[in-house]
Length: 527
Image 1 (cartoon, rainbow, N blue to C red):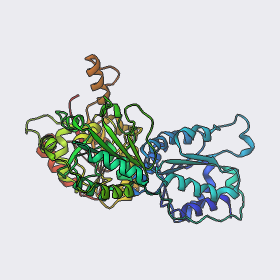
Image 2: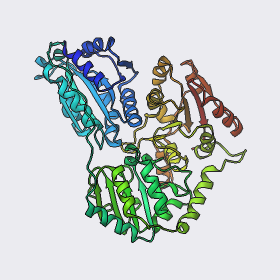
Image 3: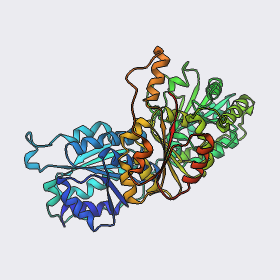
Image 4: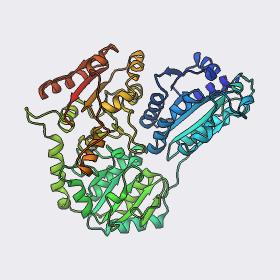
């Protein structure tokens, strides 16, 4: 068969359902190999959108999402989404076309050294330089992308290689490699440290969600009575309806979560990456004893220098800890007041005459969404409010990019989420992030997707404005002008709303979120 046919057979054997991307001249053979395959190629409006779709697909399913672009600008446009998957620990395989090998030794049209360009933002990448290595290259790309900690990998496929014949066949996908259990000595030291603490705290990171560790984590919480704070990407590891949950590290307008963190004398960090949230913000005085439980050793950082490291499968490590923490329990009197204040804050609706705000919208949004519905948050001021004030009741139901923290992810992410889950999907975005990839609404309508887009519109890069004003008392370089978002949405043939009162907003959200159609709701608010 042709090498391009072998590539597609290998992808199918990996279980790939969708490839998100743009067609390109150098991808012609791959595209026609896909035509009669079980894999659906989804043309997007921009390669960045394609990479974000693959990123969110991987994060929700645990299986590598696949994106594709041609050489040169196609590959450079993919790069931001690939880098987002890299820092968000989302399994992704990127495929890029390339010109024929006969011209790559010299300057030529659209030719860049893409392999080296991708190198800093992937776990592994290579050029498929011979048809006989297609099978090994694809298997390795998926194995490394999905192996803990997951991330992005990249394959470059020159057009002349794609046309060549080969007798090679796909490699079978084997069971995932599993990390060993933690060693007994480290386990005993961790249990001694946590049992000896007066005010132990559990920090749930992205890894707690990513490794499906919610059940043993909940058992540990119940047994120890310890409070739990999550990173933005760890939301839902413990249900925010649980009395032990303090939501995220920044939750509470009166810094309630931070107050509890300050009191804590020991922290069990579960699946935590320091890229998610700077440890200097929750361990500024370097005075907390820390147990690090993760698939990899902790990064070296002055403010995160664990006393004990349990490097193992996270689920297995939590189960093993359970057996060593028998009888270890803390009273809840040192955090119950703060928990009650946070709970009241996130449930309180605004006064009828109050101006629209992100925080005021969230109680209505939470009521309109089922526990297993998925919220994809873009990056900006609204992301901070969602992270702190939007309760998550199940793992992987509040998707926030906070490794690379990339604007523009919400709309393409909602496309991927709608394809990946049966639940309702909401994309929450600001006006800045929305227009970065709003063209993917056309992709969504072409696919027949159904989800709700909420655009928080302040005609500004609002988060930057707020930080500038905090620092200097003024803002500069952040003001925007916007189109009429309702008319813009209607031009794609989708339903659009701009409510003027809280009652109207509540009614609109209750109606459109359960519908199997795309709808846009604009929420204008003051900067």
